[in-house]
Amino acid sequence: MVRPKKSLGQHFLKDQSIAKQIVDALQIDGKQVVEIGPGTGVLTQYLLKRDLDLKVVEIDRDSVAYLKIHFPKLRDNLIEGDVLRMDWNAFSEKPFHVIGNFPYNISSQIFFKVLEHRDKVDQVVGMLQKEVAERIASDKGNKVYGIMSVLLQAYYDIELLFKVPPDVFFPPPKVMSAVIRLKRNNTGRLDCDEEKFKAIVKQGFQNRRKTLRNALKRLNLPPSISSMKLLDLRAEQLSVADFVFLTQQIEKSDA
Ligand code: SAH
Image (tube, rainbow, N blue to C red; front, side):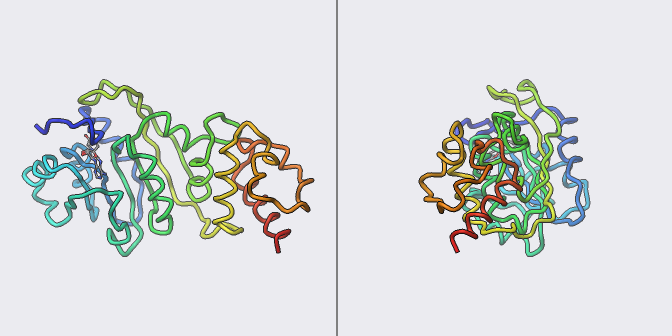
């Protein structure tokens, strides 16, 4: 057995049926799959039973040694290192899918990586802290709806699949967990300047209790749009489409 290390967010899943459910949640066309943080391979064993081109990325030496012994089939597809410091384009030339019982301390950073590689990452099935999963999957109007929800939902259809209690892990985490699935939607590029969109979303939620008119002051919005009704709302009341529309209006009056 590998002794779990807290600093690496290691909580090994003990429950085989949950492991299988997570792997079964990946509904894919292509075969390229990257597993983040295989640990001792509880998900990996089921992934290897499917007809997939699987790569696994693990930072922990002890886990890597364990995987080499127990899953000789992985061979060159076992990548040792920090997934946040890797070039995700090198995982595959074709689009690929991401799966994992993610290290909870870096799960938000993993999703920012996904966003950065949205043209390559087709589907994500991940287990993470329940609160983070809820934030990512939540709809407008919800108090946990935020930057991550809007940015990810702009490009992905997101479902919270099921919740998982602490006692199925070793050691048990202090929080509840949840499994979510993200599927790339049909939006190639947003219908507006994507950098500006991101800036507006971020600034809007930075002062989430203020109306957008006040929250966005720092962005020096053109005076011509100040009568827009959307600006009377707070960021959490806007859908992705509303943010796109707002960005378009700002662009138009900037021109
Ligand atoms: N999939 C296993 C382990 C989950 S715990 C299971 O379900 O039992 C999270 C795993 O991510 C651990 O194995 C940990 O070593 C690994 N990990 C943590 N930080 C990482 C990083 N930056 N890059 C790659 N793997 C990481």
